[in-house]
Image (cartoon, helix red, strand yellow):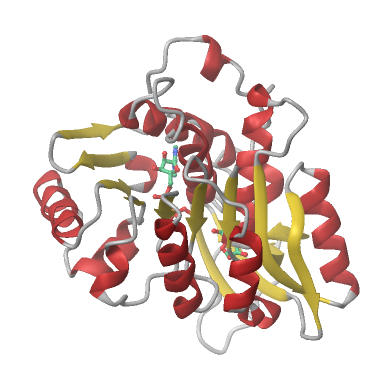
Length: 314
Ligand code: ATP
Ligand code: RIB
């Protein structure tokens, strides 16, 4: 079982020809609303890609909060319809989290109102992880309060679970939090914010990965957008995996698809190596950049079945 602790947002995506200047009003080319939030997107990625292992049980349980408003109910139902377990998604008397996503060619800019996502408590974590086993995984991001993420990671570590952190959006973290992280997967901006190193070339990527290892993390994946990713297993295996060349429509959720796919395949020891899991994640994310939206743009198992049936390579 993979437990995803994180945000659930109502994404309002505006497609723009260009970004407005200060004081300017611009008309958008299109507007769509859908399920988003880094936590929800990653949970959906796991559920959709996990069909291969489908034995009637859910592969993923989401731990999160939405509002008691209509949109909160709708997003919770949508998560469930994608195959995500929602037993630990609670509705509270706050507005559901909302994200305004502006998409302009290959670039997006996202503004988030956290709302109900801030309502997750330590007792929610205790309840959700009560029956978790050492073979289970906890996956977190940073769109819920940092002290809750730190608490969940420590509880998961105490149970011997695998822990994966996508530190997005990046906030400076206490150094001892890194000790409870098995795999960290930041993008370029997050890497720079957390390590002070801009991973613009191979030397700086190596330096940044080394810095995460120094802080206690075993596996590091730096996602580099259209340039793929750099990976390191405690410096033993160091590699660069190129991105697939695909037409880019909207990159929103690419990182989430990558991280969800990685969480699904990485702990299957014996089935995939760390490097193979990252190649798989790279291929899964390439589907997401080719279409619009966040959770709704994540590929299903059937769509990417060749990822399982063919030799894994980028
Ligand atoms: P986002 O916030 O846009 O969802 P992110 O910033 O968290 O994404 P990125 O590093 O931009 O994460 O992308 C994650 C992965 O998605 C990359 O490692 C790559 O495999 C894939 N990807 C991203 N952009 C492209 C692209 N233009 N072409 C092909 N693959 C891409
Ligand atoms: O990573 C993409 C997500 O970031 C969007 O779905 C938005 O809700 C923000 O959380």
